[in-house]
Length: 351
Ligand SMILES: NC(=O)C1=CN([C@@H]2O[C@H](COP(=O)(O)OP(=O)(O)OC[C@H]3O[C@@H](n4cnc5c(N)ncnc54)[C@H](OP(=O)(O)O)[C@@H]3O)[C@@H](O)[C@H]2O)C=CC1
Ligand SMILES: CC(=O)N[C@@H](CCC(=O)OP(=O)(O)O)C(=O)O
Image: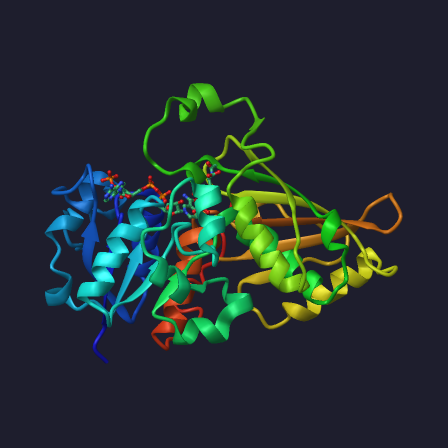
């Protein structure tokens, strides 16, 4: 079988490099286009020495790409939000048969007004915003298979949605009493240098940020409202953890109509019994970020709170894998008709 032709926009960033790492082992695709901005013109192996032993296309500037001539089967877009919508509008106008998995936040929100409110400007590609399918595979698998443009979910939001969406759909928890206390490793902030991200300023410390106003609340509200069948407003606080990879969310919920923590656990066990990338631990056990590092797995633990009627859920994933590039490859596998786990079934690196 001829291999599918794949491009990665933003291959010199963290999620772009993670895509290259995963796709080098994928038997059904070949990487024919890698783009960069500041690093355009360089070899991938010069930017990331771990790729020097492999044959890869040189990094090029997006402006130099002839989309109509290339006719790629699928493009992963790993660019900053806002830039993404301009680039993809142009790409899909010139190559309408190319499929796209977008890792940015640009196409995750269904509503133009919500986008403008949370991102501070009008969306530049409203038609594409309407067309995009939200790419959390465990929830939208059937729609993703038919989609041309998939909006890969956010890393923080995936970590919270995987335990909470099934519980909201089952009407097993109070939608108005969800509290998500989330901590992310530093690669979540991308590779572009910022003073606040220096080792000397991040190591041996810990802080909350975006308190009460982080943009990921819009994505959580949207997806939780769909799952609950009524508007949900969620409490979510992100923290910057001085580790490279990983997100751990501690989530506080109240069972509805007397549902116990054991019953919530049973719903998650049943929901995910056949899912390759979500593992629910035995009741009372909780996961560590090391259990998922470098893998596409999400691990979920449920325990009873001492406060009657409440439960504590702990969910972990690797922000660069299930939180971004692994999830994106899972989406690609569905969109191109491959087995869903192809190229992303490696277990975690430990320690
Ligand atoms: N990091 C994470 O854990 C997650 C990230 N995301 C999202 O994925 C996207 C990529 O994130 P990440 O890989 O972390 O980001 P990085 O900052 O690490 O990489 C950004 C990439 O985009 C390129 N780029 C930047 N500006 C432009 C521009 N104006 N035109 C063309 N190319 C440009 C950069 O090129 P160069 O380096 O050569 O300048 C680089 O290749 C973002 O939208 C982010 O929100 C989603 C989930 C998780
Ligand atoms: C640690 C850190 O800074 N994390 C980023 C989220 C990661 C990301 O870029 O994800 P999205 O694509 O979902 O926006 C943040 O808080 O904005």
